[in-house]
Length: 295
View (tube, rainbow, N blue to C red):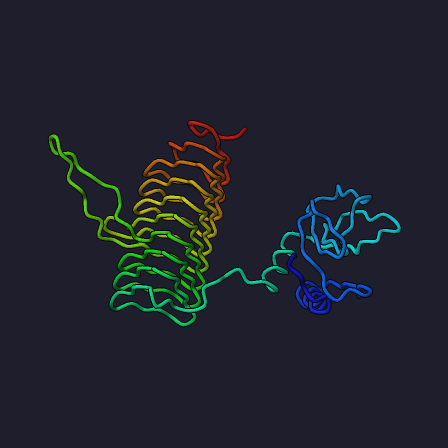
């Protein structure tokens, strides 16, 4: 189990959230576990108030502010508005899951690149010419970043993703196909995360845009000239075809496919597995094949 010094935990909760944690008698370290494990001397959290207090063994439970605590409860309950957020901040403060600490000698970096301070690049990465990587960004092992790509600060590109690959475009001539060169680039904003094995293709002439705060899960595909709006979430195994415009704060669930050239409005939700063939209005939920509005 992972463990945290109790004194340090108390200081962190007080300074970060103005939450007081009473001293835990004879307990210098507290362990982390999943809620269903529910072991003694552990720190845990829950998002709902339907706790089985008869089986609760955790020393500390981070819980919703409306939870009702039974009398003689042996677990110290810390009430907060957003338990999951508090728990995430604890993990962020006390643990680090990043294993890359510098620029690997095996990384191949092209000419005229701008690699800003704090950037970490893993083993066997390939960085093309004229690439810009912003401050404190992390490039995981095996990532390929094609030429002219621009990446903002504090981004995370996970293992084996491809940024700036050639777009899929052909013109049929009799019994043959002529490939259309894609000579644009990819521009990624600040605080963006791109999942492992995800591909983001460069624009045909202009840019494929992934704006600030976007999070893309593993094994997804973003085609040429797509514009992904600020703080949008794209889950795993999503396919976004060429020139799609996605409004900010949208949510695209796993397995969604979006046809080329349409617009997804701000704060829209595309349900799991939806096949989206028409534009979606802002603040609208769609699902199904073909995707239709939730009533």
